[in-house]
Length: 354
Image (cartoon, rainbow, N blue to C red):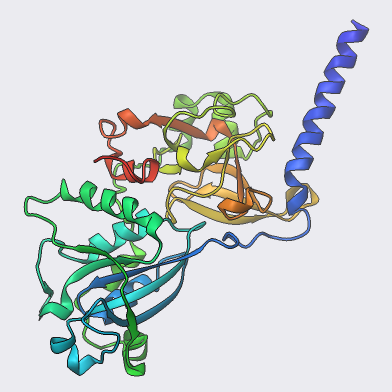
């Protein structure tokens, strides 16, 4: 009996040590959400560049936008000469890929264009208003082509968005930069308020009452999501789990993480380098236990998930989302379409054969 008591106390002590090691990095300051050294760029042509820029500058993770002229006949261009130079009105987007993925940016892009309309968007017609995705990093080409193929299934007519490597980008005149910010009532063929609305249909992600959750959830799931409890380390079925698919909020079904961004941090809890989209999570300051940490909750319903730290893999942005497995439900990749998560397939397989 004495040996059993000693083992119990040692196990309890080890659990405390693991918990403190996972929270030590956050003991002194709140973590600003965003990775390190994961800056990338993509160039998007979607009709009048005033509206395209006005839309994308609102997306979390977008660091900088510039309007300009891309992929014409020469290395020089100006607004009045676009008919002759054959450049497309284009927006340069610099973004933090540890916050927002290329797939999410492209989903936003297809949201605000008619990809089946040739040389015309809104009321603007002409080659300068053609749609195009221009890349500078060759590693992006397969992801872009895969996403366009994925989107083609949503349209009966062929998609006519040109996908090319950027040949040149000439910065537009000063008065075209941040045009709608300078002229709020200016012409725009895009509804800019869409940038602040859910990218995907969230009507099915209902938030149950506490009473309903008590009946549907296991005790540990309720304690974690509703009472901010922490499950014991190394007890989650998802700790060492590496199947392809998505992890959704156990309370609402809202997608939270992709297996693409999951890794083994060795801390005893499922760990991820980023959220599946910028609309998945909410970040709260947590001063409990005498520390100042960043709590992670589901944006839909507010279920407690865990915390995010800045000691993650450097080559993935440096963040570590330390998440309670009890707050998650896994949807295998081959069942995502059937369960209503087809829109999220590219977030699991960016170069998938759709």
